[in-house]
Image (tube, rainbow over all chains, first blue to last red; front, side, top):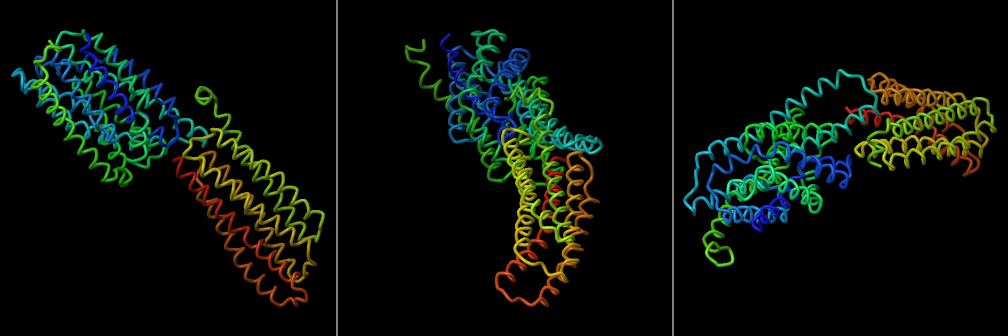
Amino acid sequence: MWKILSGAFLGWSLGANDSANIFGTGVATGTVNYRTAVWLTAAFLMAGALLEGPKCMEVLNDLSSLLPLHAFFCALAAALTMTAMTALAVPASSSHAVVGAIVGVGLVSGSADLSPLIKIVTCWVLTPICGLVFGYLLLRALTFLFNRTHMSLTRRNRIYFLGILIAGCYGAYTLGSNNVANVTGVYVGSGLLTPRSASLIGGLAIALGVLTFSRRVMMTVGRGIAPLDPFTAFVTVLAGALSLHLFTQVGIPVSSSQAIVGAVVGVGLVGDVRTVSPRILVKIGLGWIVTPVSAGLLAWLFVVFLSGPWWFS
Amino acid sequence: MFLKKLIGHEDREKEVIRDMDSHLRLLQDGCKAFHEAIERNDHARMRRVKELEREADTIRRDIVSHIYEGAFLPYLRPELSKFVELVDQVFDLLEYASACYLEIRFPDSLRSEAARVAFLNQEMCGMLRLTLQATTAGEDLREKRLAIRIYEKRIDDLKFGLMHDAKAIPVEDFWEGKTLSDFLSRLSSVSDVIEDASDHLGIISSIIK
């Protein structure tokens, strides 16, 4: 059972990194305080992991037949890559890291089946596009609705507060349901865990990461990407969450960072405003390429150099 | 704190809005007292402006502390505070002008024009209060802000006439002349700050939409 420790480490790293996409804008705009945000994220994330988590596990197991030790290496390589990205304050994708690691291990062991990669990569490409479309349409629709509804300042203030809160909780739920597969999905294929126990352990690990180490990236995402007002912050999180939920139903773990960045761009398109600074986009883009490649390389190195020694047998 | 915010029925926000309205009502009363005091050369009425300023100061402190204790989204807080500070600035101008008035023998040749400016300031305050009410009710502000700009333009026209007439008054004592000049300068600045406050309401309205 010690082999699931790397998955728990990855979950912790994912929680620290990706929770920024949920309440980052809410915390940065001061709408929700950091402590409330992390507790809400942890709770709804667990709910998502337990209720819909197993949906995305199958596709990861189709990529390669993993031995329990290889599953350990995959999660460890992905976790180390994610931790490095977090330390550099780059919103990285755990889905990319895990898939990169599985492919890396699969290539060494000769069990890699690259055919599901087409579906996976297509979904990865579609994630920011989906976020963009949802962001654009939601902002248009809600602006239309709000402009035709007569509301007092206090009522509007309350609606924005509740909107950010509800969208954040929904975002946490979808993060748990989509990304728990990245954390412990590899152990289901290797026979170490059942989908239910994998969801529980993965969810707990992510929640721990949210509670202990998420502040820095949360501020990077919230303050660095765009100067959002409460209304657009709410729409952005909702659009990102909808995209993530959509891909959970398709059964593909995708990047919540990509979904949110797409949503931010979509929101910016409505007002013809440049919402994303090019420097941050380059930083994120670099993380998207570097993440799967380094995770794959690291996993490959682990299998080649560490599979033999007696302490792993 | 969070649960209070979640289940509370906008109480804190409503209290801030009530206080902001009271703050403006006091300003309106202050402008009215100031106008009547000039018109009737009533020093007791002019002293009332200072009392109203003190009352308004207490309300201003309450509003700002309520805002920073968590009323409204943080995004709106600095803007609401700035509006309150602008209203307070109007009070300061009014208080200083009233102090100047009490120090000098006000020339009768300037009285009617000064009273006219003070009256328009009073009307502008009333309109600013209506603009605040429209902002909090989520209504359109265009007409009200336009009315404030028109008042400001009329005061501007009067201001230059007042300065011109003031130059014809013989000044025998430096401090008498300086105090009169300060009075006129503060009197004519009130409308500028009211206009700024009205513009700020426009900003608040755009932010929340």
